[in-house]
Length: 152
Image (cartoon, rainbow, N blue to C red):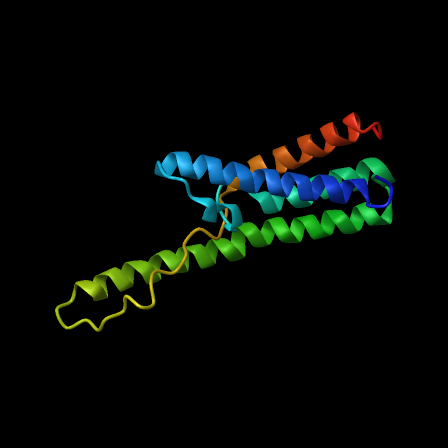
């Protein structure tokens, strides 16, 4: 395991597990198998938050909280989490509004045929609970993984 940094392995693993959870969770919610949720950028839990948190916690455990690499990882994580909430949250809201306008236009008797365009994907951002759950899952997975693999 020394050829690949353990924090990176844990971060990628928690990312994949979160995406798999989304497939199962949203498929059950929609009452049909929806593998597309495995590559969505939004939803609960935030795989972005889980990924960067697992990486940061793993780096903190391995290199220490006073290390430069831990500081860089914290800044990187803060930027990713902020982006997932604020920027992509706004993109998600714009997508909802565009789709709502599109539905209204489609109802007009003289509306041009817009079906070729299709709706804009709306699930791209995260709520605060999505992010909080992602942070908790990422931190817990990193601590558990580091402990199980004997580095804690």
